[in-house]
Amino acid sequence: MSLPVAIGDVIADKYRVDRLLGSGGMGVVVAATHLELRTRRAIKVMQPHVVASALCVERFLREARALSELRSAHVARVYDVGRLPNEAPFMVMEYLEGQTLLSRLAEVGPLPVEEAATYVLHACEALAEAHALGIVHRDLKPDNLFLTQAHDGLPCVKVLDFGVSKLLRDEGPTRTSTGAIVGSPLYMSPEQINAARDIDGRSDIWSMGIILFQLVTGECPFGGSNVLQILSQLANKKPPVPSSLREDLPPGLDAVILRCLEKDRERRYPDVVALARDLAPLARPDPEPPAALVARIERVHAQATKKAAMAIAAVPEVDASFALRADQAMDLARTPPPWTSPGIRTTIPAGGATRPSGDAPTETHAAKPRRAMLRHFAAATIVLSLSVSLGGFFYKMSPGDHATASPVPAASSFLLPPLPATLPSTGLSAPEEAPKEAKTVASAAASVGVVPISSGSTHPSTTGRTVFPQNRSTPRPPPRY
Image 1: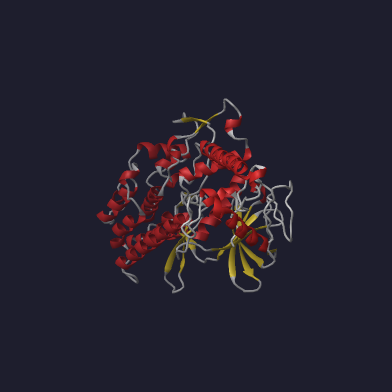
Image 2: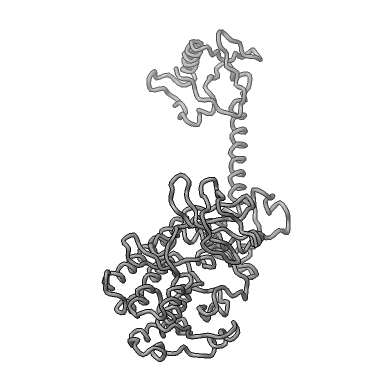
């Protein structure tokens, strides 16, 4: 089978392939050097024959997304992703030197209790952050725990291969089909074997119990020559007590391992923080006290939980009733109003909540006209009609009245009180005072360019500017003298 890259190839115009680190059915891992920075990197490249599988590509990218969110020192860092010219995706990762715990176990045999407990606590620190962010590994095993050295030279275990991890907050349908079994049978939890969709962090705790059992005894609690035998033992057999296979194991370790391997996940440790508290007294006391290690795991878990809560809070929440009203408004904008088509009825869930598909409607409303708009329109029509009628009535005058008619609109008579029979200022009666008042109004009107209508003319004459009422239905304000 041809490899996707060869020694000496340059990936993405900046990574030169130096040597092959490992290969498998899904991809290869090569050591590369950044041409500009002169730093070593490990690059995982997918095999060409699996690029056509959308599921394999999705798992590859899922691993990159999961690793990019984790900041723990016990997780291999991801620096970049991309695609080769043949569309094969690649992932630029932290270059690690060391060996897997499976290789370590094959090299030295069962590990001392303190060493095994320390390695598992390192993995617990990585899982504390991952689980708080909603990431379940689902494929923990000694071959995915890499033993290397930290920057201070102390042993450090890093968790690898998040390719089949599950992101609990992913939206949309699940990535695996119903009935699909994901993981390694020797380390899979009962709920994984049953292909349960509600997998959570307790599935990884089961795997950690299997790993710890194997590190201190050199054997797996459930074995067999094929997958069916392994699954049969897991379903029907209780895990053996670790101290029955190795006599020098402390009773506290038996209790920790057996609680991790409870087939009822409700009886397991609720999270890796609780597991770390019970396992820490069995770990190596130097160079870091177990209490300090547990305190750091608790801080990592709390910080990651806070980060996940902030990420969820950053998504704006929309009131369900408001969203329903917005959807209805969009529907009305796209389609004619329902009352224009007789017989159309709309069904709306009671309370404004979105009704699940297939449920019967809880409340039905018939489409009705907009009564408020009709009432406003009717009121405006009545007011306008009255204004036209009253205006025409008061502006229409007989020819005999034009000689003494005031240019003031007749509508103002509703605002001014009628003249008394005897004027208090002159003592004259109203008929005797009227000619004098008319002369005064006429002279004032002429000063502003308005001439009263004479009794013998049919059209008003002008001296200067003449004002013709264009719409007799609209009252004009009285001129100010």
